[in-house]
Image (cartoon, rainbow, N blue to C red; front, side):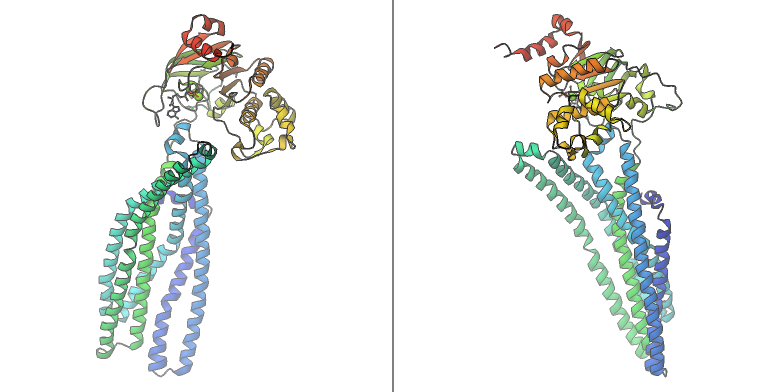
Length: 580
Ligand SMILES: Nc1ncnc2c1ncn2[C@@H]1O[C@H](COP(=O)(O)OP(=O)(O)OP(=O)(O)O)[C@@H](O)[C@H]1O
Ligand SMILES: [Mg+2]
């Protein structure tokens, strides 16, 4: 799992190699110190070395300490550099991947979970890499070298380690197994918490309007409690680590002192050697302990790696058609055809078809309206044209070619779309409009703004087109936002312009002006609008009436008024009260 992610260390390989190499030098230094100390005791104090010897060896120890310290600091630095770089690469890879996700892919992961995966999960793995770069070589080098030295000092005493170290290993292994699943649950609970925070913050105005703060607080409390509980469940296992380690530690030291002490008295073991031996045991046990902590971190990181790989391994279900690049594309004239289309939401839906037996032909330059009650599938229908979702049956053709055969960018460049829940991005109005066409001239931009009836209110702001739009477009009104979104889509000069309920917040007079500018300036553009008000659609060339997942009427306003019951019902429901 984690191994698969390690390729993302690219660009930081040098640091990733230097960190462990420097650690080896540090460890070698540390390994020399107890033996030198033993010499000071055996030769300098007990033997004939005297003060001069003690000062000379002490000086050597001092230099070794300095070198080991420098190597330790540098290695920590390189390990941080490599792990931070690795984290950045990983986040970038995930972000790039998510950009290719289809709507369905995003529905499936949920955006909150994607955020957790890109931040918290990556952090955990980053931490492991940092620890790993220093621990991976430090512990084995320390363990093996110290064991060899201990063995040479006293084979009998080393037996203590041969018993204790595997016991510690076994305990850590069992703990890891118990924790893996628990950490997986923790990460899911973080998703849940982020979900609740994100939803609340995006919709904070609605929450306040409905005085739902108390409810939201309880909801947050619930996911917060669940997260706390899941962490406590994991941590109550992790805390066993400390006592296990400390007891093993103490047993080892007591045994060494007891057996070693007897050997100093009876078998002629040098006092300094016993001192060195105990120091080495200390070093060995500390490295085992550090490895144990790294392994625990590994358990958590493994759960995170699974979640990250899930994102990276996703093959977006909507991508360029097969050999799309080599196809000759039809001229962009703006025709759309639905051939016996059926559609359902596979990942998030109920399993029932949202659209059935849709047959519809829209000619270049036509002005087509789609009406129908809420939830009848209007948005779903138009979302199939730029291939936000793929049909589950039948075919959608744009300019005579199946949308699945286009390179996605070419297909979407033919289409200007104003989504039902459209958003502006933080940045100036101009920057937002230029999303439509980054190369548009100021004249083009002003013209699009005029056509969308946005020009006047934009100019009424002191900064005009340089007015800064806050995140989520909070500083413009609903109707202003809709008009800016329309201008943005128009600036693309698409062959097909789709407006999904995009004038719902605009007053009738302004809407009529927009419609007029469409008929004057967008003669060759196919315009497909979804609208609730009959007044918005009555002049359309063609009106499509959707009811309960299929088309129940198709014709002009007059034709439908003559013979379509559903259309008449919508019409009369909107006339009520008008004549009074
Ligand atoms: N992402 C989704 N996942 C699952 N089901 C969905 C999704 N989007 C819409 N639906 C379902 O598909 C059906 C049609 O929804 P759609 O948004 O197309 O309706 P609509 O006609 O545009 O309604 P409205 O006029 O309210 O915008 C609804 O029953 C809705 O619950
Ligand atoms: Mg809709």
